Amino acid sequence: MAVDAIDFESDTLHMVQQLKLSRSKPVFAPPKGGKLRDVPLPGPVADALRAHMKRFPPVEITLPWKVADGPPVTKRLIFTGLRGGHVWRTSLNEEVWKRALASAGVIPERKPGGSYAESRENGMRALRHFYASVLLDARENIKALAEYLGHSDPGLTLRVYAHLMPSSQERTRNAVTQFFNAQQNCNLADPTCI
Image (cartoon, rainbow, N blue to C red):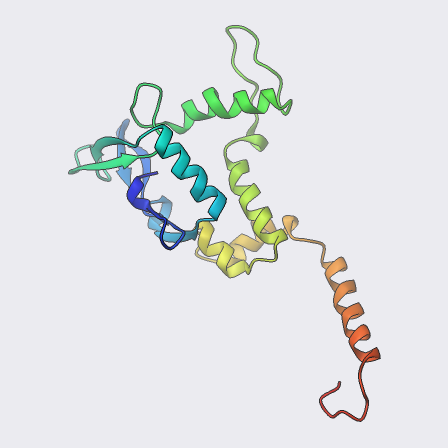
């Protein structure tokens, strides 16, 4: 994530690039599928980013754009590796994410000299599922969620995340209960009362 992707004034994160491999070399490139998008940046997340940038100042990293021999592009990255370079998903997964999962008891601790257990269902993608489930639980519009996730079709979002949506049975009970409660308070002489 580059500093220029964050707009603290409008509380927005601009998803405009990713780090990927081109002929086994790191490059900056548009997000997967070229889906540029803006995602709301909640206050607590913005505060955490500000605090992180104060403690760990962003580092300028220059990489080719799109392909290994592409034009060089310099970005001030907010998260960097231990030696000051860019962060790879694989090293973040092994060195930080799985260590946190093991500390929380989600996966077993690794044996000395060994690797952490495979944990596909608890991989980094779990953060994306968590984000979607929080928004769905808050009754966010499925079209908006699809846009934030970079899905071109809200139908795909529904197919992938429908199991995370709050119970439709409970929503149905609540809707009918609210209707009947409103009817009990209704004056039948009032033409606007249904």
